[in-house]
Picture 1 (cartoon, helix red, strand yellow):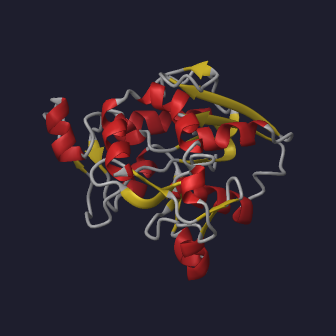
Picture 2 (cartoon, helix red, strand yellow):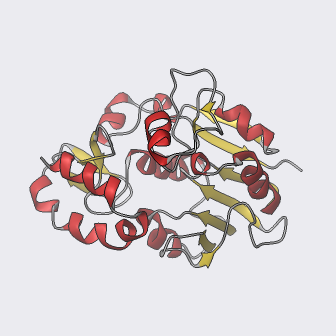
Picture 3 (cartoon, helix red, strand yellow):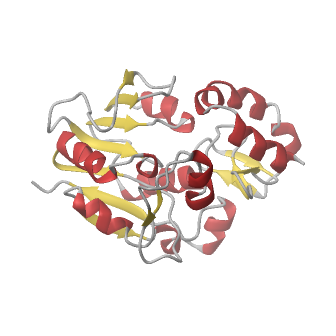
Length: 257
C-alpha cells in the first residue's frame, strides 16, 4: 500500500512541493520502520528497512525516512567520505539541484564555501539555468549536479557550462539514471508530448535514457572522465547494510587545464 501511495504522489505532485513538504510526512513514518537491518550513512539512522520509492514500479528499500537519502545519495556520501578530502579541504562548491539530505550537512562544513543553485527548486539559494550558469569561468573547485542532465534538451551544452565554471584541477560529479542494458543513449527530439516521453523515457520531463555511453557523453562536455564502479569496491555486507545501488557508476569529471 505504501509503495503505491508514494508512486502516485511522485507522479502527481509538482517537484517543488515535494521538496518543501515531503520530509515532514516521511519523518512521521519513522516509527513504522524501526529496526536495525539497514543503516543510512548520511544521517547515521538505523531502520528495519528503507521506504519504497520511485515511479512505476517503486524500488524497495530505497528512501531513508529520516533524511530522505536515496540509494545514490548514500553511495555518494560514502564515496566522498572514504575516497576524497571533501569534508576537510577548503573549497568552493556549486551544488545544482541540491538534494535535501545534503543541504544542511554541506552547509555546516566550515571549510566549504557552499552555493546552491536551481531554476525551480525552493531549496536553492541562487535561481539559475544550468544552460547559462551565472558565474565566471574557473569559479568553483567542485560542482555536484545529479539527476539533471536527462531533463535538459541540450545536455552537452549544460555539461560544457559546468566545465566552464570549474577551476583547472577541479572536479564534478554528474550522476544520471542509466539503463546498463543499453550500449547507447536512447533519445528522439521528435518525441515532444509528455505522455509519449513518459512511455519512451520513463518520465514526462525526460529527454533521454542514458546507456553505457554516458561517460563518453560527459567527455563531449570537455571533461576527463573516470568511471568508478564504487559499489563493487565495497564489501557486499556494506552494500546490503546501506542498501546501495549495486550497478551504479560514479562519474568523476575532471577539468585538467
